[in-house]
Image (cartoon, rainbow, N blue to C red; front, side, top):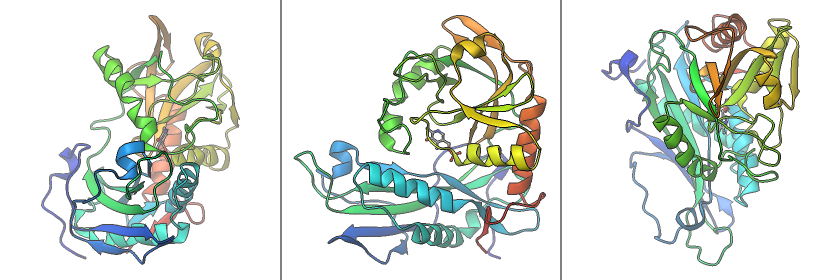
Length: 344
Ligand SMILES: *Cc1c(COP(=O)(O)O)cnc(C)c1O
């Protein structure tokens, strides 16, 4: 065991801290090189790099953390590897091999072991794999050369003192076009959501709920989290659409609901009008950062939709899903085969 950094883990926020090592691999002459851990956190590239001109870039986000029995682990990194592979193909980038991605994540975390927050602090080591076109591109086409990198940064507990329900609004902006890039994890999907989120915050809302852009009648997701709903029969209802990003947390919650909690789960199109009619008693957002954030109210142009959990705490079904999934992640509940990947 290496000595941990002297950090007030419980009071870390979600911001970038430079850690010791990062992983880099270059794609040149039609192939990925062997890759290596390096110390330099700066990147030197052409002023005309593909990423700077035409936003050819994709990324992933996952966490390393200490389990109850003192091991450092990651949660389902193979799914991040596969998703980044799929994202790269959609943007005409050479995909980074899935098995190499998982190995590179492990190497990077091991090299930054002193930055992995201790069990019980609620803090984690956030891992950011990403790749981008680095060679010059001026006519519109994919770059020839690419850089794949992974850096890590310690982040604090998402909720300090319990998960309070948030108020979100139905956005007038769209997140992703039908048959566009909503289903891949590309930086470009975030660039165009920044105006909407800055405006939402100005208006006092925590997030934007985006509707399907073709008909603007169905729920899609927020800028960075999928939506979960619980209907009056305690069925977990998950909005389905080709332009929703396939959240690993959401897919894991689907499995946990069916196989650990014996719940009924359906993935289907969900109309905003159903939500307005009060067909759902609980609502939440899910993603790696918070696992589940409860939604207390959805504001649709001044009309408020409230959920039965109210504004004080998570509803009982969301709470059970949250406790079970985080219990699996932390090693308190036995995990399905392959979900917890040991680093040390
Ligand atoms: C990353 C992301 C999510 C959450 O996915 P997880 O794999 O659960 O972290 C949801 N929506 C969008 C748009 C995302 O980019």
